[in-house]
Image (cartoon, rainbow, N blue to C red; front, top):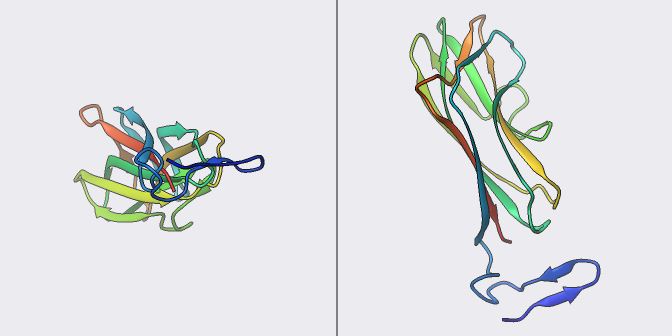
Length: 155
């Protein structure tokens, strides 16, 4: 297997130079869970507390985020969910990454996002949510395990 040692960029592996260094390999996986119910009447995104942090091995790596949770509202109306990288909403500032319409029904929702944080510093990903039309939005529950999984993908 060949490698390139550069004083400014560190050690890099050319594409396809071996199974450990080939592109699109998962380098590490971390996850977080919560199993409590929270609610909000906010029309601005608020944290659900469902979070995980990862320290990428390479600044060229991508982070694949998979978040799953359950949502419900008290009246007919939309609620929105999104993923934040540290303090940045990686979805749309208003509608986030997903919009659901519910009234008294729990909906399981999965969001996925492929991020390019361009860092080797610890990076946190957190699920945020908000209500949409004068209602109360709920996230999680005692009988529901909500999860977020982060996978570092070599590039």
